[in-house]
Image 1 (cartoon, rainbow over the protein chains, first blue to last red):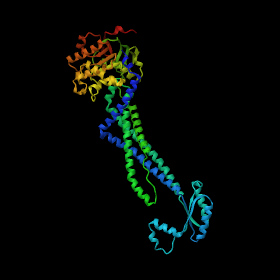
Image 2 (image 1 turned 180 degrees about the horizontal axis):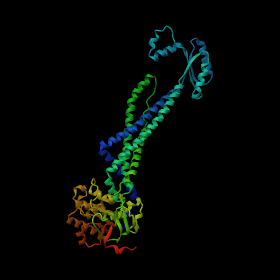
Image 3 (image 1 turned 45 degrees about the horizontal axis):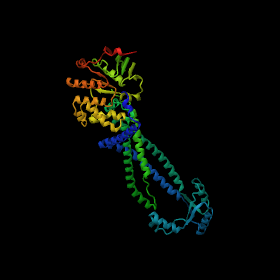
Image 4 (image 1 turned 30 degrees about the horizontal axis):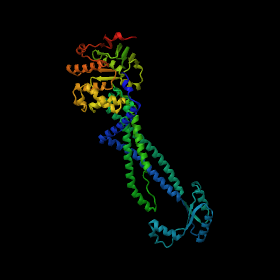
Length: 318
Length: 226
């Protein structure tokens, strides 16, 4: 008679029971979250904000990177020619540079073209009307072939071009791209650190919420332990609660981010138009959204696991 | 069923609750445990349910020395024991049915078998019509009977009861005791801690009386074979 009842439970029954319990636990814990919406919503919103911040930061650096890669492809050297240089000399230099086979394109902008462009884009074109003489020099725009000239070789190349007697001065866009990328790296590091802190914050918030839930159900846990429940049985509903918190927070965070990026997208679109750019703001892709929700769920699960591990041991029937 | 061999229990702080208690409860036997509060009755029951561990001596259940059981074996050990408490220890946010079904759900009994077994247990304690109610809607005696139904639903070989009639009037107490006798008649071993001496005297079962952690009456001592 002793263990007779235990032996009657077949393996298949155990498996079915486990499945059933998982289903029941997950829906029960979801329902209990939904039953007290104010309490749970507060926690979930805090979690969502903590998850959304790294997400927003990620989008920002992502866009900043995308911007700089846009620039890299249009990396150009501008050679400003001496006032004294004639059209003839300028054409000759263009010919020499073209022969070197390092450049994607070499083009000459005459004084008149330069003035036209200046009028068109600077916004102060009208004031130039007052000048009797065109103050702008001739410019040779040199676009190095990315495949043949590395970023580090650009500076020496510019220096050698400047040695040409008809070149007055030059400007290289790459220099500040380099700096920009360094700054990006720094801000990325800061961003990862802040994300880590926020992730720990999520763990602590979920852990504390679960801790309170466990303490609230202290007597129930004692009774269930007395009736022979294993730790796994008691643990499961709390783990599901944590999972649901994290999952819902992840979904809300994704919503927050998509609202934000939609709000900003129209403005950046106009800004890009002003800069004659085709640039479009990058939001979260579908897979990134799933990743965010997944990270939320995992953090929720892990946070509750830590809490459950710590506090279920302390509750013993008396 | 249960054997105690020179069991001592000293709590942290130095209080000695049991001082060398020995007895043996045979399979299918029913016995009472009496004594004033603080005499060690609850401690003795807790040792059997592994809610406490003995400081010295052996507690043997079903031939196994449970003093050496590992923590993770405790739940499976408790499934062999039906426990009944003075304060019922029911889950008050769940229906009578759910309370009684709890041990079956925990033990992983197949879903289709649960209703049948819950209703059989409720029928035995005469609460079949109240399965949908919440425990709080029931009287004290009825709540105790829910506790008993929960204890027997998994058909454990042993029932332990700690002051099961503590808060009940004599008539209800007698009813509860006769329930225990019914279970005992179908082969379940029963150990009941109670200070209701009048009731105990009327029922002809062996008695262990504790005083300050020692037995002053022990009807079960001759069965100890050391």
